[in-house]
Length: 63
Image (cartoon, rainbow, N blue to C red; front, top):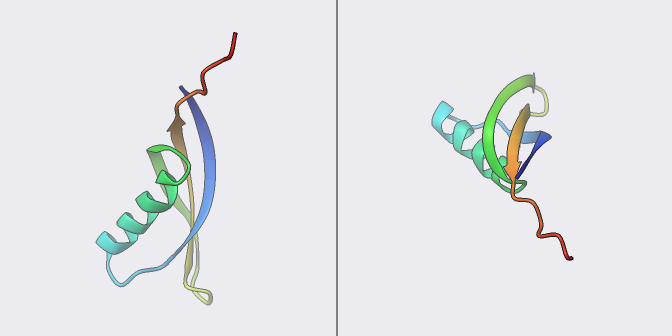
């Protein structure tokens, strides 16, 4: 297993719970979310920039 650093943009939501869910879903596209943080918000575009780490299973090595 390896960790990968991910940056992603997500749409701002009406509630904190909806935003949290949207962030988790976006990060899960890349692996199992370990930790993340909202690092910037673009109010004009209604986007949040999220940076985090995901855990990815290593591909089996062919011998």
